[in-house]
Length: 209
Image: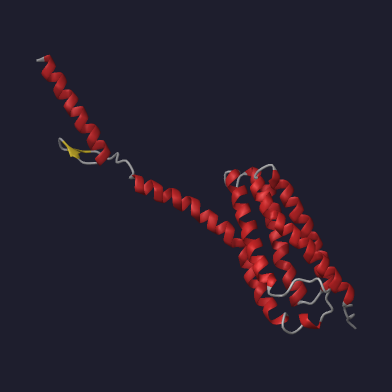
């Protein structure tokens, strides 16, 4: 009798365990602890991973699209009238280079954000500097191509280059891959700063009366 009772209890316990996993009725009682499917867990994990990745990588391109809109007209009308050094890159190289640089810095910011666990207190300085340099980057084109202010644009790009260096310094201890992704950007800014200086030097701005 004791063995039969023990076997019945074991059978009932097994049915309840199976029911908890499936969420079905057993002896008139409905279980509610249904385990999430593996497919559902994978989908949520992928969504949580890809959305920030795409967002951070695409963000710099927003300013790039606006800058391209301003540059498209000026590069055919005003820019050819300026005296420029012979070593300047061809015009066709700029959109290709900036697409690569924006993608690299955007992905680097994602790596830093991920390493710091999101927008935490530790992320204020590295991501704050990144946001500052991004704003300065977006501002240069309206100053240079939009307003034709060569000296102001030179001052702005010098400040931008220094801010990018500070951003890389703040990133180094967090993510070296992210820092390395910013290296081509800094190198290109040094070239762009030299080009801006030469254009300003060789094209005196007319003083407003």
